[in-house]
Amino acid sequence: MPVNHSLLRCAQPLTILAIESSCDDTAASVMCDGRVASNVVFGQLVHEKYGGVVPELASRRHHIDIVPVVNAALREANVDKKNVDVIGFTQGPGLLGPLLVGNCFAKSLAFALKIPLVGIHHIQAHVLANFIDEPKPTFPFLCLTVSGGHTQILWVKDYFDMEIVGQTQDDAVGEAFDKIAKLMGFSYPGGPFIDEYAQDGNPQAFSFPDTRVPGLNFSFSGIKAAFARFIQTKTSAFIEENRADICASIEATLIEMLLHKLVKATQETCMRTVALAGGVAANRYLRKQLMALADEYGWQLFIPSMQYCTDNAAMVAMATYYKYLRGDFAGLSTNAFSRMVLPTH
Ligand code: KG4
Ligand code: ZN
Image 1 (cartoon, rainbow, N blue to C red):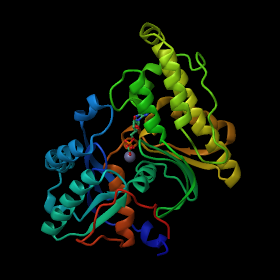
Image 2 (tube, rainbow, N blue to C red):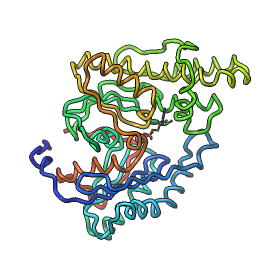
Image 3 (cartoon, rainbow, N blue to C red):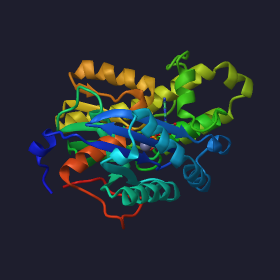
Image 4 (cartoon, helix red, strand yellow):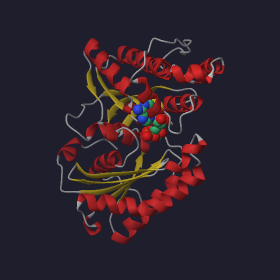
C-alpha cells in the first residue's frame, strides 16, 4: 500500500503503549502524540553466567517481568491504561518464546480494552528510532543497522520500505563483540565491556588479519577465529596487563570493517544521508568514527540517543505511531515469528 504522506503529517492526539520482548530485555513505553512519555527496560541478568541468552530462561523471565514493566511505563507516563488508544508489540524477528510472551500480553490487553493492535518488525523499529528525537532524517537514507542478531546496510525509502543492500554472511557484529568478550573473560553481553575497557587503550597496539569479503556484505567469523588464535597464544597475565589495548584494537578492527562497507555503499548508491541503528550503535568508538566520516564526506548523519539504540520499546512505539496513522493493524489472531522479512511496499 503506498504511503499517504498527508495523513502522516496530520498528527492526531494518540496514546500508544508499546511492548518489546524479542530477546533478553522486557521493555514497555508510552508515547503521547509522537513524544516518548516513558521508556522502561528490564534487562535479564540470568544469562550473564551462560555467556549468551538461554531462550527458555528468557521466556520465563519475560513472563514474570511483563506486568511490572508495563505498569511502570504507565505510571511513569502518568497514563491510565483506560486512556491507551493502541498497543504496539514486537512481532519478530527474535526468540520465539520471548516474542510469544509480548505478543500474547499485548493481544490480551488490546482485547480487554477493545483497542487496536499493531505488530512491529524489530529491525524496522531500530531504524525508526532515528525519528524519536529532532532532527528527523529525510527519505531516502542509508542505515547501518548493527545488533546482536543483525548486521545490515539498509536503503530506507520510507517508514515502510527498507531494502537490504548489504548484510552479514555469518555472525552479526554484536555476536562477534559478545563472543570475543567471552574469550576475554567478560560476562554476557560483552560488547559494552569491550567499549568500556577500550576507552583507555590504543587501537593500533595489536593488528588482526583483514578478513573482509568482497562487495557490500560482511563476514565476522574469520576475525572471531583469528582473535581466538591470538588469545590462545597469550598468557592470562599478558591479557590482563594489555586488556585496554587488546579491547581497543579488536574494537577498532570490527568497527573499521563496518565503516569500510558503509562508505562503499554511500558511493555506490550516491546517498549522502546516513543513519545508525541497533544495540552496537551504542558503541562510542563507532559513533565517534562515524561522525568523523560524516565530516569528511559531507554526509547528513543521524544517530539515535543511547537509550534508543539497545533494545527498548520507545522505538516500537515510534514504529507503531507510523503504522497506526497508515491504518495498518494486526488482528487478534496475529502470531509471533522468529524470522521475518523487512517491510517493503
Ligand atoms: O539491538 P540489541 O540490544 O539486541 C538485538 O536486537 O540483538 O543489540 C545487542 C547487541 C549485543 O551484542 C551487545 O553486546 C551489543 O549490542 N552492544 C554493544 C554495545 N552496547 C550493546 N556492542 C559494542 N559496544 C557497546 N557499547
Ligand atoms: Zn535489537
